[in-house]
Amino acid sequence: MCRRRPVRQPVSGAVRTARLSLKREGEPVRYVIIGNSIAATGVVEGIRQIDQEGEITLISGESHPVYSRPLISYLLAGKKTEATMRYRAADFYQSTRSRVLYGRLAVRIDPNAQQIDLDDGQRLVCDRLCVATGSVPFIPRVEGLETVADRFTFMSLDDARRLEQTLSPDRRVLIIGAGLIGLKCAEGIRQRVRSVTVVDLAPAILSSILDQEGARLMQTHLEKNGLEFHLGTSVRSFEQNHAILENGERIGFDLLVMAVGVRCNTALLSGIAEIGRGITVNERAETSARHVYAAGDCTQTLDVSSGITRPMPLLPNAYMQGECAGINMAGGGRSFNQAIPMNAIGFFGLHVLT
Image 1 (cartoon, rainbow, N blue to C red):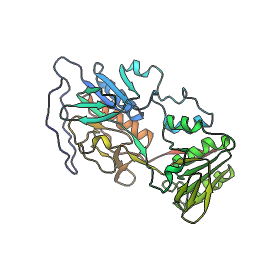
Image 2: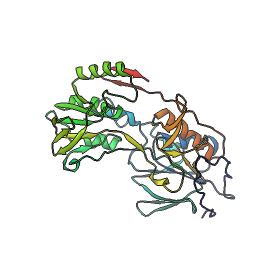
Image 3: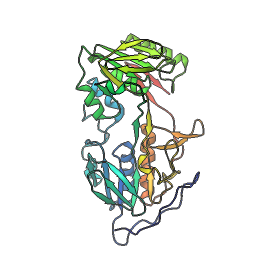
Image 4: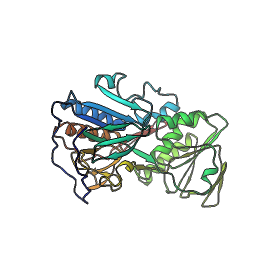
Protein backbone atom coordinates (compact mmCIF):
# COMPACT_ATOMS: atom_id res chain seq x y z
CA MET A 1 0.00 0.00 0.00
CA CYS A 2 1.20 3.50 -0.73
CA ARG A 3 1.55 6.19 1.91
CA ARG A 4 -1.68 8.08 2.60
CA ARG A 5 -1.66 11.78 1.83
CA PRO A 6 -4.28 14.47 2.43
CA VAL A 7 -6.60 15.41 -0.41
CA ARG A 8 -5.39 18.47 -2.26
CA GLN A 9 -8.35 20.76 -2.81
CA PRO A 10 -8.74 22.49 -6.19
CA VAL A 11 -7.72 26.14 -6.17
CA SER A 12 -9.28 28.35 -8.82
CA GLY A 13 -6.73 29.44 -11.38
CA ALA A 14 -3.87 27.53 -9.75
CA VAL A 15 -2.49 24.14 -10.69
CA ARG A 16 0.43 22.63 -8.81
CA THR A 17 3.78 22.69 -10.59
CA ALA A 18 6.20 21.08 -8.11
CA ARG A 19 7.88 17.90 -9.31
CA LEU A 20 7.00 14.75 -7.43
CA SER A 21 9.27 12.23 -5.75
CA LEU A 22 9.25 9.10 -7.84
CA LYS A 23 9.62 5.81 -6.07
CA ARG A 24 8.68 3.93 -2.97
CA GLU A 25 12.01 2.65 -1.68
CA GLY A 26 13.19 -0.34 -3.70
CA GLU A 27 9.93 -0.79 -5.61
CA PRO A 28 8.88 0.17 -9.16
CA VAL A 29 6.52 3.09 -9.66
CA ARG A 30 2.92 2.03 -10.27
CA TYR A 31 1.39 4.00 -13.14
CA VAL A 32 -2.31 3.81 -13.98
CA ILE A 33 -3.81 5.36 -17.11
CA ILE A 34 -7.59 5.63 -17.37
CA GLY A 35 -8.20 5.32 -21.09
CA ASN A 36 -6.65 3.50 -24.04
CA SER A 37 -6.67 6.25 -26.63
CA ILE A 38 -4.16 8.30 -28.60
CA ALA A 39 -3.43 10.37 -25.49
CA ALA A 40 -2.95 7.20 -23.44
CA THR A 41 -0.48 5.94 -26.05
CA GLY A 42 1.48 9.16 -25.61
CA VAL A 43 1.48 8.64 -21.84
CA VAL A 44 2.87 5.10 -22.16
CA GLU A 45 5.59 6.15 -24.58
CA GLY A 46 6.44 9.19 -22.47
CA ILE A 47 6.85 7.07 -19.34
CA ARG A 48 9.07 4.58 -21.14
CA GLN A 49 11.39 7.37 -22.32
CA ILE A 50 12.32 7.88 -18.66
CA ASP A 51 11.35 4.80 -16.67
CA GLN A 52 11.89 1.30 -18.06
CA GLU A 53 10.96 -0.51 -14.84
CA GLY A 54 7.68 1.03 -13.70
CA GLU A 55 4.44 -0.95 -13.82
CA ILE A 56 1.97 0.49 -16.37
CA THR A 57 -1.73 -0.43 -16.28
CA LEU A 58 -4.29 0.94 -18.75
CA ILE A 59 -8.03 0.79 -18.03
CA SER A 60 -9.78 0.43 -21.39
CA GLY A 61 -13.53 0.84 -21.64
CA GLU A 62 -13.38 -0.68 -25.12
CA SER A 63 -12.25 -4.18 -25.99
CA HIS A 64 -9.87 -3.15 -28.78
CA PRO A 65 -6.19 -2.18 -28.97
CA VAL A 66 -5.61 1.53 -29.53
CA TYR A 67 -6.90 2.68 -32.93
CA SER A 68 -7.31 5.91 -34.86
CA ARG A 69 -10.87 7.11 -34.21
CA PRO A 70 -11.00 9.43 -37.25
CA LEU A 71 -10.85 6.31 -39.44
CA ILE A 72 -14.14 4.72 -38.33
CA SER A 73 -16.00 6.24 -41.30
CA TYR A 74 -13.49 4.60 -43.66
CA LEU A 75 -14.23 1.28 -41.99
CA LEU A 76 -17.91 1.64 -42.94
CA ALA A 77 -16.95 2.69 -46.46
CA GLY A 78 -14.84 -0.45 -46.84
CA LYS A 79 -11.58 1.50 -47.17
CA LYS A 80 -10.11 0.36 -43.85
CA THR A 81 -10.15 -2.76 -41.70
CA GLU A 82 -9.81 -2.98 -37.94
CA ALA A 83 -6.22 -4.09 -38.46
CA THR A 84 -5.32 -1.10 -40.64
CA MET A 85 -6.98 1.28 -38.18
CA ARG A 86 -4.54 0.38 -35.41
CA TYR A 87 -2.52 3.32 -34.12
CA ARG A 88 0.39 1.15 -33.04
CA ALA A 89 1.81 -2.26 -33.98
CA ALA A 90 0.17 -5.41 -32.66
CA ASP A 91 2.95 -5.91 -30.10
CA PHE A 92 2.71 -2.37 -28.70
CA TYR A 93 1.58 -3.36 -25.21
CA GLN A 94 4.05 -6.22 -25.01
CA SER A 95 6.96 -4.10 -26.21
CA THR A 96 6.16 -1.35 -23.69
CA ARG A 97 5.45 -3.91 -20.94
CA SER A 98 2.00 -2.47 -20.34
CA ARG A 99 -0.99 -4.32 -18.90
CA VAL A 100 -4.40 -3.52 -20.39
CA LEU A 101 -7.68 -4.20 -18.60
CA TYR A 102 -10.05 -4.43 -21.57
CA GLY A 103 -13.77 -3.76 -21.20
CA ARG A 104 -13.38 -2.18 -17.78
CA LEU A 105 -14.49 1.22 -16.53
CA ALA A 106 -13.10 3.28 -13.68
CA VAL A 107 -16.02 4.33 -11.49
CA ARG A 108 -14.30 6.13 -8.61
CA ILE A 109 -10.97 7.74 -7.81
CA ASP A 110 -9.76 8.18 -4.22
CA PRO A 111 -6.79 10.56 -4.46
CA ASN A 112 -6.20 10.37 -0.71
CA ALA A 113 -5.52 6.62 -0.80
CA GLN A 114 -4.37 6.77 -4.45
CA GLN A 115 -6.89 4.11 -5.41
CA ILE A 116 -9.11 3.54 -8.43
CA ASP A 117 -12.26 1.42 -8.22
CA LEU A 118 -13.43 -0.43 -11.33
CA ASP A 119 -16.91 -1.46 -12.42
CA ASP A 120 -16.16 -5.14 -11.71
CA GLY A 121 -15.28 -4.47 -8.06
CA GLN A 122 -11.53 -4.54 -8.65
CA ARG A 123 -9.43 -1.90 -6.87
CA LEU A 124 -6.12 -0.61 -8.21
CA VAL A 125 -3.48 1.23 -6.18
CA CYS A 126 -1.14 3.62 -7.96
CA ASP A 127 1.66 6.10 -7.42
CA ARG A 128 0.91 8.17 -10.54
CA LEU A 129 -2.44 8.46 -12.30
CA CYS A 130 -3.30 9.95 -15.68
CA VAL A 131 -6.90 10.51 -16.72
CA ALA A 132 -7.24 10.19 -20.51
CA THR A 133 -10.97 9.60 -20.77
CA GLY A 134 -11.52 11.59 -23.96
CA SER A 135 -14.90 13.04 -24.84
CA VAL A 136 -18.47 11.78 -24.88
CA PRO A 137 -21.34 12.52 -27.28
CA PHE A 138 -23.61 15.41 -26.41
CA ILE A 139 -27.23 14.26 -26.74
CA PRO A 140 -29.72 17.15 -26.59
CA ARG A 141 -33.05 16.61 -24.89
CA VAL A 142 -35.61 16.30 -27.66
CA GLU A 143 -39.23 15.30 -27.16
CA GLY A 144 -39.90 11.76 -28.36
CA LEU A 145 -36.25 10.76 -28.83
CA GLU A 146 -36.90 7.65 -26.76
CA THR A 147 -39.50 6.50 -29.34
CA VAL A 148 -36.81 6.09 -32.02
CA ALA A 149 -35.87 2.41 -32.09
CA ASP A 150 -32.69 2.58 -34.18
CA ARG A 151 -30.64 5.52 -32.90
CA PHE A 152 -26.87 5.76 -32.74
CA THR A 153 -23.88 7.91 -31.92
CA PHE A 154 -20.69 7.91 -34.00
CA MET A 155 -17.67 8.23 -31.75
CA SER A 156 -16.02 4.83 -31.54
CA LEU A 157 -15.29 1.57 -33.31
CA ASP A 158 -18.10 -0.06 -31.35
CA ASP A 159 -20.48 2.71 -32.48
CA ALA A 160 -19.48 2.09 -36.10
CA ARG A 161 -19.97 -1.66 -35.80
CA ARG A 162 -23.41 -1.25 -34.24
CA LEU A 163 -24.47 1.14 -37.00
CA GLU A 164 -23.04 -1.13 -39.69
CA GLN A 165 -25.27 -4.01 -38.58
CA THR A 166 -28.37 -1.98 -39.48
CA LEU A 167 -27.29 -0.61 -42.88
CA SER A 168 -29.04 -1.79 -46.05
CA PRO A 169 -29.82 -0.28 -49.48
CA ASP A 170 -33.45 0.42 -48.60
CA ARG A 171 -32.83 2.40 -45.41
CA ARG A 172 -33.10 6.16 -44.95
CA VAL A 173 -30.63 7.74 -42.53
CA LEU A 174 -31.17 11.01 -40.65
CA ILE A 175 -28.08 12.62 -39.13
CA ILE A 176 -28.48 15.42 -36.59
CA GLY A 177 -25.36 17.57 -36.86
CA ALA A 178 -23.45 18.94 -39.86
CA GLY A 179 -20.08 19.07 -38.14
CA LEU A 180 -17.06 16.84 -38.65
CA ILE A 181 -18.55 13.78 -36.95
CA GLY A 182 -21.90 13.94 -38.70
CA LEU A 183 -20.47 14.52 -42.15
CA LYS A 184 -17.79 11.82 -41.83
CA CYS A 185 -20.54 9.41 -40.83
CA ALA A 186 -22.56 10.50 -43.87
CA GLU A 187 -19.59 9.91 -46.16
CA GLY A 188 -18.93 6.48 -44.69
CA ILE A 189 -22.46 5.14 -45.16
CA ARG A 190 -23.74 6.97 -48.26
CA GLN A 191 -23.13 4.13 -50.72
CA ARG A 192 -24.69 1.57 -48.38
CA VAL A 193 -28.10 3.18 -47.80
CA ARG A 194 -31.00 4.65 -49.75
CA SER A 195 -30.57 8.24 -48.58
CA VAL A 196 -28.76 10.44 -46.06
CA THR A 197 -30.38 13.62 -44.72
CA VAL A 198 -28.50 16.03 -42.44
CA VAL A 199 -30.15 18.57 -40.12
CA ASP A 200 -28.27 21.33 -38.29
CA LEU A 201 -29.30 24.46 -36.42
CA ALA A 202 -26.40 26.43 -37.90
CA PRO A 203 -27.04 28.19 -41.22
CA ALA A 204 -24.00 26.50 -42.79
CA ILE A 205 -22.19 23.18 -42.54
CA LEU A 206 -18.91 22.79 -40.65
CA SER A 207 -19.61 26.13 -39.00
CA SER A 208 -16.78 25.77 -36.47
CA ILE A 209 -14.02 25.48 -39.11
CA LEU A 210 -15.20 26.98 -42.42
CA ASP A 211 -16.17 30.50 -43.45
CA GLN A 212 -19.33 31.15 -45.46
CA GLU A 213 -17.74 30.65 -48.88
CA GLY A 214 -15.88 27.50 -47.85
CA ALA A 215 -19.05 26.03 -46.37
CA ARG A 216 -20.99 26.81 -49.55
CA LEU A 217 -18.42 25.09 -51.75
CA MET A 218 -18.29 22.02 -49.52
CA GLN A 219 -22.07 21.76 -49.26
CA THR A 220 -22.40 21.86 -53.05
CA HIS A 221 -19.83 19.08 -53.32
CA LEU A 222 -21.62 16.96 -50.71
CA GLU A 223 -24.99 17.45 -52.39
CA LYS A 224 -23.48 16.23 -55.66
CA ASN A 225 -22.53 13.09 -53.76
CA GLY A 226 -26.08 12.47 -52.63
CA LEU A 227 -26.46 14.23 -49.27
CA GLU A 228 -29.53 16.34 -48.49
CA PHE A 229 -29.38 19.23 -46.01
CA HIS A 230 -31.87 21.07 -43.80
CA LEU A 231 -29.92 23.95 -42.23
CA GLY A 232 -30.90 26.78 -39.92
CA THR A 233 -33.45 24.61 -38.15
CA SER A 234 -33.55 21.88 -35.51
CA VAL A 235 -35.70 18.94 -34.53
CA ARG A 236 -38.65 19.92 -32.38
CA SER A 237 -39.72 16.35 -31.69
CA PHE A 238 -39.54 12.75 -32.84
CA GLU A 239 -42.46 10.43 -33.48
CA GLN A 240 -40.89 7.00 -33.97
CA ASN A 241 -39.60 7.13 -37.58
CA HIS A 242 -40.39 10.79 -38.19
CA ALA A 243 -38.65 14.01 -37.17
CA ILE A 244 -40.68 17.21 -36.89
CA LEU A 245 -38.50 20.27 -37.47
CA GLU A 246 -38.93 23.70 -35.90
CA ASN A 247 -39.83 25.07 -39.34
CA GLY A 248 -42.70 22.61 -39.59
CA GLU A 249 -41.12 20.15 -42.01
CA ARG A 250 -41.56 16.46 -41.37
CA ILE A 251 -38.77 14.02 -42.32
CA GLY A 252 -39.18 10.26 -42.46
CA PHE A 253 -36.21 8.03 -41.64
CA ASP A 254 -35.25 4.49 -40.64
CA LEU A 255 -31.98 5.13 -38.79
CA LEU A 256 -31.04 8.12 -36.63
CA VAL A 257 -27.47 9.24 -35.89
CA MET A 258 -27.00 11.89 -33.19
CA ALA A 259 -23.85 13.89 -34.02
CA VAL A 260 -24.60 17.24 -32.43
CA GLY A 261 -21.24 17.52 -30.70
CA VAL A 262 -19.05 16.24 -27.89
CA ARG A 263 -18.25 17.17 -24.31
CA CYS A 264 -15.06 16.56 -22.33
CA ASN A 265 -15.42 13.44 -20.19
CA THR A 266 -14.56 14.97 -16.82
CA ALA A 267 -16.89 12.98 -14.55
CA LEU A 268 -14.21 10.99 -12.71
CA LEU A 269 -12.47 14.12 -11.46
CA SER A 270 -15.62 16.02 -10.49
CA GLY A 271 -15.09 17.32 -6.96
CA ILE A 272 -11.48 16.10 -7.00
CA ALA A 273 -9.68 18.46 -9.39
CA GLU A 274 -10.35 21.83 -10.95
CA ILE A 275 -12.64 21.59 -14.00
CA GLY A 276 -13.79 24.21 -16.49
CA ARG A 277 -15.11 23.16 -19.88
CA GLY A 278 -12.54 20.39 -19.55
CA ILE A 279 -10.11 19.22 -16.90
CA THR A 280 -7.75 22.06 -15.98
CA VAL A 281 -4.07 21.17 -16.33
CA ASN A 282 -0.83 23.12 -16.28
CA GLU A 283 1.97 22.97 -18.84
CA ARG A 284 3.18 19.70 -17.26
CA ALA A 285 -0.28 18.09 -17.71
CA GLU A 286 -0.78 18.10 -13.93
CA THR A 287 -4.24 18.63 -12.49
CA SER A 288 -4.87 20.36 -9.18
CA ALA A 289 -5.12 16.94 -7.48
CA ARG A 290 -1.88 15.52 -6.09
CA HIS A 291 -0.22 12.89 -8.31
CA VAL A 292 -3.07 13.11 -10.85
CA TYR A 293 -2.40 14.09 -14.46
CA ALA A 294 -4.77 14.44 -17.42
CA ALA A 295 -4.29 14.49 -21.17
CA GLY A 296 -6.19 14.50 -24.44
CA ASP A 297 -9.77 15.38 -25.30
CA CYS A 298 -10.89 15.43 -21.65
CA THR A 299 -8.75 18.51 -20.92
CA GLN A 300 -8.81 22.18 -21.81
CA THR A 301 -5.61 23.66 -23.21
CA LEU A 302 -4.30 26.96 -24.55
CA ASP A 303 -5.24 27.64 -28.18
CA VAL A 304 -2.20 29.46 -29.59
CA SER A 305 -4.27 31.07 -32.35
CA SER A 306 -6.67 32.84 -29.99
CA GLY A 307 -4.98 32.85 -26.58
CA ILE A 308 -8.09 31.19 -25.15
CA THR A 309 -7.98 28.09 -22.97
CA ARG A 310 -10.57 25.65 -24.28
CA PRO A 311 -11.09 21.99 -25.22
CA MET A 312 -8.99 21.06 -28.27
CA PRO A 313 -10.13 17.59 -29.40
CA LEU A 314 -7.49 16.98 -32.06
CA LEU A 315 -5.37 13.85 -32.45
CA PRO A 316 -1.87 15.42 -32.63
CA ASN A 317 -2.52 17.57 -29.58
CA ALA A 318 -3.84 14.56 -27.64
CA TYR A 319 -0.69 12.56 -28.33
CA MET A 320 1.71 15.41 -27.50
CA GLN A 321 -0.06 16.23 -24.25
CA GLY A 322 -0.14 12.54 -23.33
CA GLU A 323 3.58 12.19 -24.00
CA CYS A 324 4.20 15.29 -21.88
CA ALA A 325 2.17 13.78 -19.03
CA GLY A 326 4.03 10.47 -19.24
CA ILE A 327 7.47 12.07 -19.20
CA ASN A 328 6.59 14.19 -16.18
CA MET A 329 4.91 11.29 -14.34
CA ALA A 330 8.23 9.46 -14.65
CA GLY A 331 10.25 12.39 -13.30
CA GLY A 332 11.27 14.12 -16.52
CA GLY A 333 10.73 17.71 -17.59
CA ARG A 334 8.42 18.39 -20.54
CA SER A 335 5.99 21.23 -21.23
CA PHE A 336 2.92 21.33 -23.43
CA ASN A 337 0.98 24.56 -23.31
CA GLN A 338 0.44 25.66 -26.90
CA ALA A 339 -2.09 23.47 -28.70
CA ILE A 340 -2.40 24.03 -32.44
CA PRO A 341 -6.00 24.23 -33.75
CA MET A 342 -5.19 22.67 -37.12
CA ASN A 343 -7.12 19.93 -38.87
CA ALA A 344 -7.00 18.23 -42.26
CA ILE A 345 -10.10 16.42 -43.44
CA GLY A 346 -11.72 15.32 -46.67
CA PHE A 347 -15.17 14.37 -47.91
CA PHE A 348 -15.70 12.40 -51.13
CA GLY A 349 -12.29 13.45 -52.43
CA LEU A 350 -12.48 17.16 -51.57
CA HIS A 351 -9.98 18.01 -48.83
CA VAL A 352 -9.86 20.89 -46.37
CA LEU A 353 -6.96 22.17 -44.26
CA THR A 354 -7.98 24.46 -41.40
